[in-house]
Image (cartoon, rainbow, N blue to C red):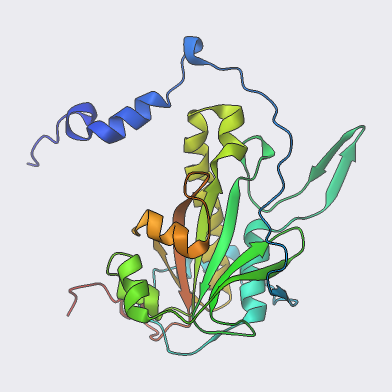
Length: 266
């Protein structure tokens, strides 16, 4: 019989403090405000790459769901830019504009609390056809990538940045989701931090399913050195926080267990 893990509060006090601090009761309901729309992050003058048309995923969703597996074994070959464009658009692109009287709504692929869309997508590119190695930032409104930091970066340093996970450094690209906290928390207060995490999960699941449908391998990564990663991405860590990352590449193996390449496996 498993030992009693104890109460949440006693054994994980920091996590408990966060959970209870963002809980809501009648007397803690702030009522919220409707903040003005904040534009996404852009960097004037940065080298620019317009995204090309990308292929559509033709496989049934049920098959894509069945085929999804974490991949830690990547070939040393590039990912093509059209497939990467499909991934980025499918995650966070701007869609159709709909009007109702004086209200305009812009369609997006994923749900977002209050329609505030606080996330930003950055790419650490090692080997992508049509993109220079370095750090790129996706600008949904212009459907392109701006180059913020030139690479290449030593694989040993990327592995260190992601807390010793070698498969991240072997991937062709790493998509990093970060959140501009003021876009959400100004409306929802501390509770908004939960919504940032939920939205990162929505976007990442879309990303990995699209990649699977296009024959690419992915592995999701929550372990990294926060301040160092923020510095690499050129973001102010007191205003925009990295939340989640996904390594993307061409799988080096066919079998599901071989793709997993579980550490310590024989």
